[in-house]
Amino acid sequence: MTQASDGYFNNLTEAISRGWNRFWFTPADPLPCAVLRIGVGLLTIAHLLCIGSELDRWYGRDALLTPAAVAELHRLSSEEARYHISALGRYAAPEINYHLWAAIAVAAAFTAGLLTPLSGALTLAALLSFVHRVPQVAGHVEPVLAFLLFYLSLAPSWARLSLDRLIFARKKPPPPNAPAVSPLVGISANIGLRLIQVHLAMFVAMMGLTKLYGDAWWEGSAIWFLLAQTQSRPLDLSGIRNGGKYGEFLINFWTLAIVYYELAFGVLVWSRALRPLLLAIGVLVWLSLILATGQLLFGLTILLATAAFFATTVELAARQASVA
Amino acid sequence: MAPAATPSSNAPIDPTLRSVISLALVLHLLCVGVVLSSNFRRSRLQSELVRIFACYTQLLDFDPQFTPYYHTLGRELDDDTWLTLDLYAKGEEPAAAQPLVKTVRLPEGGSNWLGDRRRYFQLAKLLALNADPELENDDATSEIARSVGARIMRETGNQRCVFRCVRRMSQPLHLAELRTGFPPDPTDPAYDVLVYEADVWLFEGSVQAQKRSSAAEVAPRQTNPPAGTKSKPATAPRS
Image (cartoon, rainbow over all chains, first blue to last red):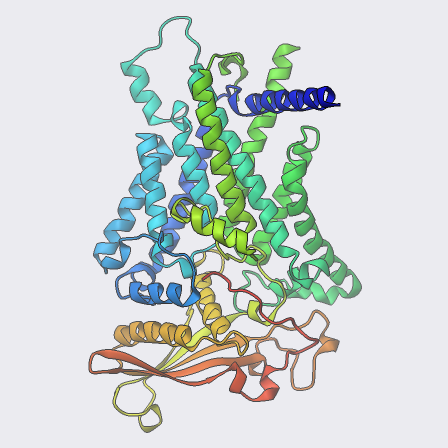
């Protein structure tokens, strides 16, 4: 009995170890990381430009919520808030505008792949300085942009489609017969891409699970509650109710499609057979969520992040084709 | 994605380096998993772990805290809420004794696609949550009223304002379910509920706030939803 259980645990450990190494340490092409870097950089610039419309009113020294008010609200809510660190509260217009333009400049450098690890880290720091200045009004998109910027700064997203590659390739031409990408760069690219995938899967699962708390998502009426908000809805789609029974069915289907998709994503996206189907449905789901909530940048960022799975699917197909 | 550029899949990596990276990955994913699973409700264990990991997860914003990724749960708290400020010139005189200079509504203009209006709604919902009779926190509401009031008074050159937080109740899907007193037009004032009201004024360089009323004290008709019964607010949008 002891021998049998020992054998089982040895086999289990070996299987987990093999699977773990295959998942994380198989070299990958850095091209998907580079494509994601460009997309994430552009979305970060768009986010910063949106913030810029009322920069001093929200983030300046004498903003709607002053640094003292933010600290007091944290104290009153008994939340752990020691790590909301931002220097933005020391500045007012016009100095705070310089901070924004510097943030946009480093985000543009990251997008172009110029000194990518450094510009990526600085872009992340700039994004976080806004989040931590007034966490009470931080939105849905920032936590997604933050993890994408973090992983793409660590991964060799500079190895393709970048100014870094242009500049350094001229200075240091690769030796003849050398692989296009070194094994360590390939492994780093894979780790970066895998981290985005795992983090995104957990994130979408969290989105689905939080919806299960209220009746609205169970009963299929949540989308109606979003469409019925006369002030915050991006489009007036309340005419759907004029469709009577079928209008209600559409609301129910729309609501349940979103919540079931989010709950299924974290599990089914790891199935090679189902992944392409899931990603295709995802485009419809995220676009429909943008229509209902108006969270344009958030929806586009999630869509972009799911491209990390698309890249793996294409790469696996290419490998299988080359083996065949 | 060009297959020709894909490096060899049996490339060597130092086992020690691999072990170190593996350990870092496990720790990182543990932190991320814990904070993501604690987004809505937290056990004491989760709260403690979130506190321990905060130096990493909060600093890098991996922890979405209580960001409402559910978008709505169909509660009163999820309905549109905004702030209005009636501005008056003199700080030392009560509002009733002087003419109204201007009314500022937050948000004013902006786009619902790009997030600029969302920040105002989020702030108003935070105030409304703290004004809720079951979770009432006067210190938090007056802190928000003072800070927002001071900024708008400074912008407009006034010294006193009546600060209001208003919630617009949403209509049910079926108009037939509307209660008496609620017309078909969803923007009718009958749907607007005064959640919080306070006087804010500048006095000897400091900002003072005095609450007038909160949702618990307004007329009963206004607190009835247009139809059915909505669940009570249970958690903060993000605070």
